[in-house]
Image (cartoon, rainbow, N blue to C red; front, top):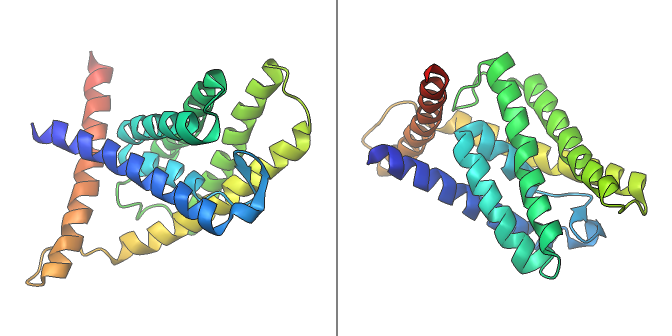
Length: 213
């Protein structure tokens, strides 16, 4: 039951964080839009990468649900194929980078072993993977107008949004206490740290168990 609860809250938190970041982005950086769905600064990209780095598959599922929700209700309400494709591709790109981080960096839930250079590598890797996957799909469907300008714009938007969110979260996680104390605020922050660690360890255990089957 505890495991299911962790899964649920990991997915729900990812969905809420993505929608909130999208709202903030549209309120603050709406003027940076290149075309609909592509901005020169796109904060939700940071949430995409962060959520998968922190909670793995749960992050992917939360992003997929968030992508379907926002694509169908906001970005492309009259284009279901584009909406579904965008949600899948937008979730797959950060998950591929997460697998890379697991394999080569021994990723931890607190991100403490992700140094600034490693975070930069992951941010660039995601910022290449996401627009590349999207534009390969665009090419396959014949949507090639302003292809390279759109590709470059999405790369820049993903990179700037990802760097802003990654380094902000990296700094926040570094401040979270590693043990409980008598302070209610500190205990609350400690609970966040424990929840993130448990969520990630749960993902790791599930992956190992699946691999042994």
